[in-house]
Amino acid sequence: MKFLDEAKVFLKSGDGGAGCVSFRREKFIEFGGPDGGNGGRGGDILFEAISNLNTLIDFRYHQHFKADKGDHGRGESRTGASGKTLVIKVPVGTQILAEDKETLLADFTEEGQRFLLLKGGDGGFGNERFKSSTNRAPRKSTPGWPGEEMWAWLRLKLIADVGLVGLPNAGKSTFLSVVSRAKPKIADYPFTTLVPNLGVVYIHDTEFVVADVPGLIEGAHEGVGLGTRFLGHVERCKAILHLIDGTQEDVVGAYKTIRRELELYGQDLAHKPEILALNKCDALTKEMIAQKLKALKKGAGKEVFTLSSLSRLGVTQILDALLKYVSPSLEAMEED
Image (spheres, rainbow, N blue to C red):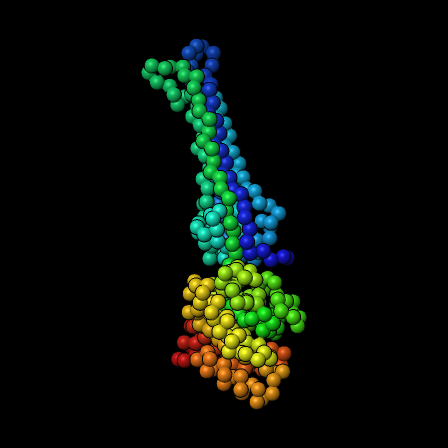
């Protein structure tokens, strides 16, 4: 299934049905009076979040959504049937934005969450509604009120416990493939990952979700390399795992580049708990590892883990560290 995290859709709720002009005509009742019923309400547009979707790909091929119109009124004071509500199912983590792509209309963070976006138009009045003491046989009715319509943007922000960040080719996809059953594309060139990947990690009878976010580059907060869309998938994470490619010369510069993008993007990304790891240590000598660890600790001002996804060096230690942020209750039990 292809991944799509943004889509533009046209939405229109149903128009109300027209009122009816009718008069009661029965044997032995010569002047029965008006009995035209009102039109039915148009259908509403309703969004619902479900858990078995993780992409907006369906909205690439189906972009126009229109709810049913209300039925017209009928004689014998019968009101027309209301239009059926159109329920649009979206993945958990979807946001609905106005056409300006800035005004947030709805944010779905839980399964089963619903949001009524557009109301259907009211039905028109039948001639029975216009009967009065001075007008006993009105021939007037009104059409139904039109429904609401708008263009809207759907934006998906993945619901994950941990977000993997780092420069291109930092080894994020390899790490995800080792700790979970996810099978992201892995190759020895930058920007191998073009869409976010999710993997479920099982450790100590606990599971949590890790999101492999495509490699960020300088200027990502301004949209360079689709950075703003990728950074959006990290917003909901409880912790960040920041991987640094140990085979590059300036590991401190690589760290500061990503940190700068997180700070400039905002949304409190820079304040999320961060686990920092020097990756690809299997390709380094002990002296090189010690040298780069020392520089990175000084530049970042925090503990740095050594990691090699291929040889599984440091994998368990990093997962244990992440688990403290993902499942604080588990940590509290261990301390007791």
